[in-house]
Amino acid sequence: MKQIVLFLREHLSWIIFEVMLVTFILVLYWLDGFRGINTAIYSIIMSLLLTGGFLIGKFITRRPYYEAILRKPEKMEDALIRNIQTTEQLQSTKFMRDLYTLYQAEVQSLYASQHRQLQFVNQWVHQMKTPISVINLLLQEDGELDKRSLREEVDKIQRGLDVVLVNARLETFEEDMQIEQVGLKSLIQHIVTDHKRLFITNGVFPVISIDESLIVATDEKWMKIAIGQFITNAVKYTFEKGKRLYVSAKQTAIGFELTIRDEGVGIPASDLMRVTKAFFTGENGRLTGESTGMGLYIADEVCLKLGHPLTIESEVGQGTTVKILFTNGEIGETDEELDREIGASDEDL
Image (cartoon, rainbow, N blue to C red; front, top):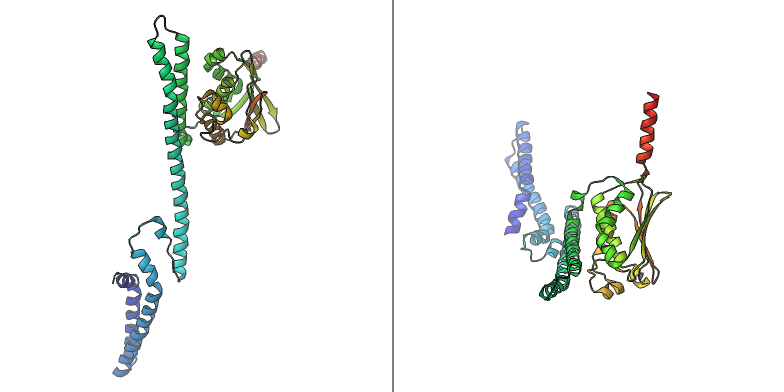
């Protein structure tokens, strides 16, 4: 019954039009002097029969469609209507299937994001138990508190918290992004200063070889996070004291290439293609037991979103080289050059 009601509501305007059309034709004949009542009745009956037959035939062809849309859906696949015949139904079904595909893609993306976030938080909470346990042991010891050891464990917790916060902000990266002109050497110096204690603790010495005039267009805050992660990994996986970390930049045909090269243990070839995947720790991560597998993933995501191509090369026992390409860099003027230009301008005046 619901199908008939829906069909009649859909075709109500067409039925009214047909009635008005037949009435108009009968009135036209009557005004023209035609007075045959039997012919009028015959015309009305034939119009009703033809219209009724047309509507019945159309209803039969549309009945499976009405059954499908009037049935209470139990799952999303019910939106994929089958047994369709008319051109309108075909187009409507195609639209619904395209919409369903988009919906599935969004659901899968949301599910993957939530699953990744939950897995990361669970893993991070588990790993934070270690520094907290060490801090409790240090506090329980008699005698003077070992502040250096305590500071190391606090730094581990701080780095873990920073990774959690950064991972959460990645979901709204575009809202937090701000592109500006940044001095590359100044950026690196600030990052190295922020990680000074890490360098001292591991006995690694940074060597910076970057021209002060190099200017790149990027988000300074996010690049600090990405480059900071590369530096942290380089220092953390350099187990021999006295080694160096080299940070340099050179001009290429398409921009400026920042290179971060360490003398650490290197990354096995089997792990190299997967180091930027979420939660991948690899052989080196299992050596320390502190890796969450999210650091390089976050750094890679940041470089990708900022449009800075990233490449990672490594050889076991020789070290790892990370290269970031800034395609929109330029050579600016140093303070000394600017002072000379100002002085020359004063003389001309």
